[in-house]
Length: 219
Ligand code: SF4
Image (cartoon, rainbow, N blue to C red; front, side, top):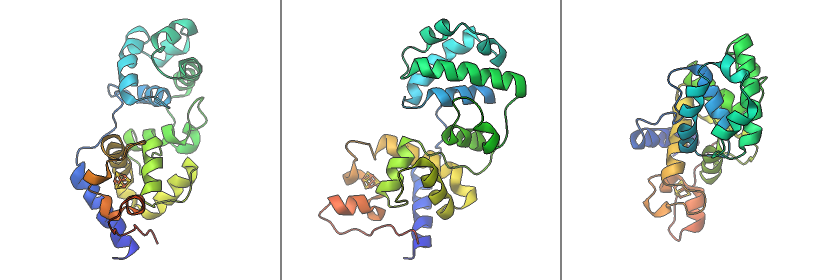
């Protein structure tokens, strides 16, 4: 099997495993809220963010409201979220940016917002603007390495490596599916290789398993 065929097989297998994979952050169809939720999700579970944001939106329903919020009140709402003090500063500034200028529609403009890096920008491009996007969160980073899709550890370089091998029309859902697989099976500390449907593709599994498996080639 050539590298291209192997990637196609991986994409198709992930489609069968996770046909309904989607963004797990809740934003009530309001794009600016997804920006805020994604900033909050750094190094925190989406579930924790989804628990806190309804309280935030009840008190500050618009970006203008949030931009002029009392910082200590926002911190109190977000105190169950990791790094909540730093994130509070970022989301208040990002809300001010969006209240004044609206939501940018390119990655280059999105990353000018306080607290917004390529991960958040890609979430917005894929989910809100329907553009091909590769979101490199902790799961995509880990699985890309284990599956041999990249040799890099820098998220920006991983994104570029994946963009080279994943067809544009598949990119956004490929990210969602890798994230889902990372949460369910390919866990950080104890990947469940013995029950993993991707094991025949996986160099990591081959390395750690006595069984012979086929490494995933990307070239
Ligand atoms: S075989 Fe193991 S390391 Fe490879 S993707 Fe599956 S769970 Fe992860």
